[in-house]
Length: 72
Image (tube, rainbow, N blue to C red; front, side):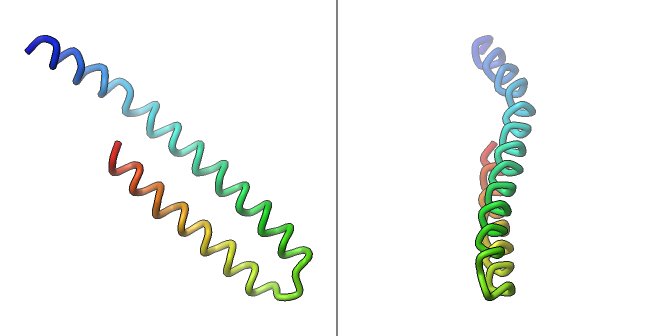
């Protein structure tokens, strides 16, 4: 019983840093996607297709972030 209580407290202490870490990773991945798609956008003839691709990738990351946050 005491062990379980200690473990639960330790897990609770790790929850906030874990969420912060997930947030930082998502921010960095979003920046990478934007940088890559802007490069493609710069070299691309079709601006709307590149912007759609960028938005699609960002939405994809956000969906997976929400899954991760739910699991934490």
